[in-house]
Image (cartoon, rainbow, N blue to C red; front, top):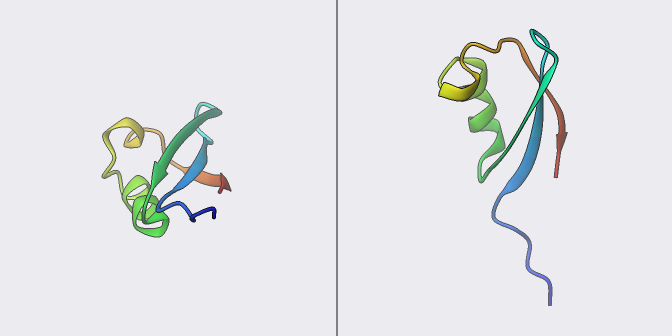
Length: 55
């Protein structure tokens, strides 16, 4: 039997330099809030970010 994953993979688009950021999280909503508030070091200077894909 296939078990659902405890996390999802997501892709963010950085509108500033037109780059993609790929990561995964167990709580996507919380993680996106951290990204957009500057709380994630790797994307803190890459605002605004747009969620373009998650699975």
